[in-house]
Image (cartoon, rainbow, N blue to C red; front, side, top):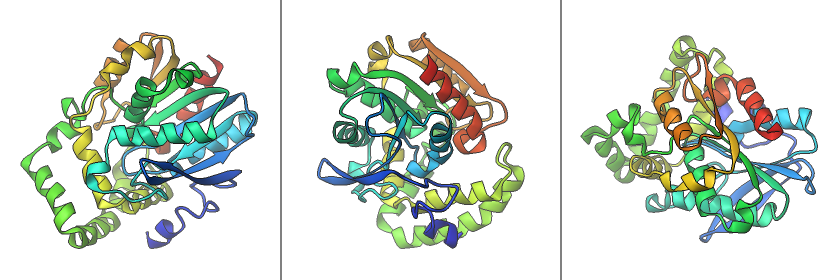
Length: 308
């Protein structure tokens, strides 16, 4: 596990982002936000990828490779939102959807000043994508041609799924422990990851490869505890229903795994109710990490959004 985590951001090891054409940092609210690019800078269409909770841009490695192979004319722009990956660590009270939306908008302003935009968001990234669609300047909104939302919600996560169960006194105790006893919590987190990874590989449907389990665990372990606690706390109550009017003219797709207990199918149905133009896709046997469990299904959904 240690080796996987150490190699996570070397941009040479797979699974993970490799063969980048460009990378750098932008400032967002005073924080350094890492961005990564693959494809021509003068592309007519750019896909902006927004990763999920306690993950990083690395999680979209399969979709980036798909676009490189099948659509070399399309540009991929990815970022690590604040408190994740190679972006700057931030205090717990700065870890929220609005702040992460600022990060995406800062990257778009500097790295995607022209051309059509397709926004892709998984989990927390889906909520951030809705936030960006709702809050972006009209000039940016007019260039968004479509969106792909994966395993996400437009309602607060405490409304449905496992987050509703986790919104308990025990969760509050864990939140406080992350802030006051980080070293001790980190120790147990690392030990738990080593024990849980083999069990997940053996039991979790759609996730048969230990390599994928370790890759996912490495991103989890790479995430600072402040980010773990802050974003979780924000997601319990954050909703993006106000994005509905701007969704109306966009084409897109909403994807969910049939075994997702974090953002179950009912959350996807609610998005589709509010976004009638979107197609709904259920990936049979996949859970919340569908982008790693069945990457081909996500790539094909992205293909459909690009062709719409």
